[in-house]
Length: 105
Image 1: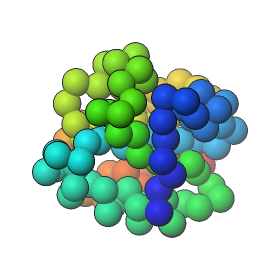
Image 2 (image 1 turned 90 degrees about the vertical axis):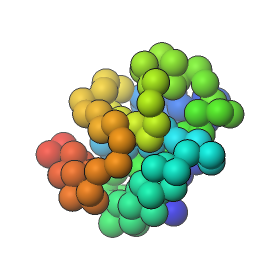
Image 3 (image 1 turned 135 degrees about the vertical axis):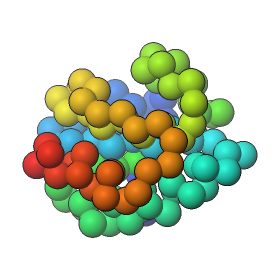
Image 4 (image 1 turned 180 degrees about the vertical axis):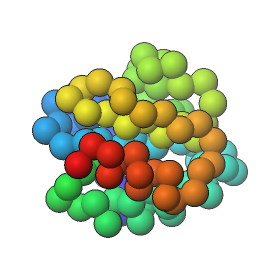
């Protein structure tokens, strides 16, 4: 299961991580987000110990969604060393998310 990321733990979990981090910006009412959610959960399990994979509910946590210009959801951002190194807007196949992490390992 993907980690729950919030505005309160974003800096510690995402920006200060020594591993690649994938964050799914989503909302409960968003149909495409519900399609991406299970894929992100699978990626989380497959990359356990190698990368941090989490979800941020944009309705409850607007600070970092705004900071990174997330205007459409789902948006999946990939971070390395506190910097955004990848962005996927909309639904993509599982391989697209896996390749984004593989490129950083």
